[in-house]
Length: 80
Image: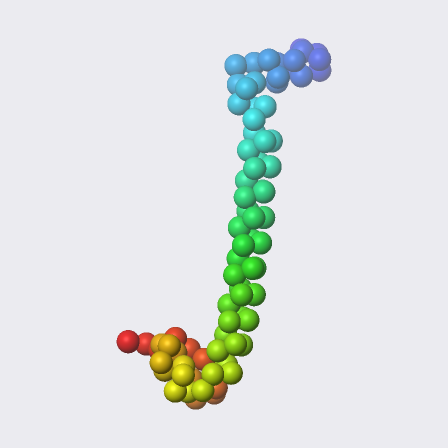
């Protein structure tokens, strides 16, 4: 079997359509993973800024909105 014949079989065999879509599926999966990673990073940054904003509240105000201050000064969600 020649190299040309082998190459022809790769793209015109019974699984040619399946093989042709694999790179597209991989690229779509990579794009989805990158989007998910970017979304997580944005949420982490938003959480940090929100917690910094809550850090300025008094202990009484934190209790009113469902948070509490830990012994080291960090703001935590109040446990029921």
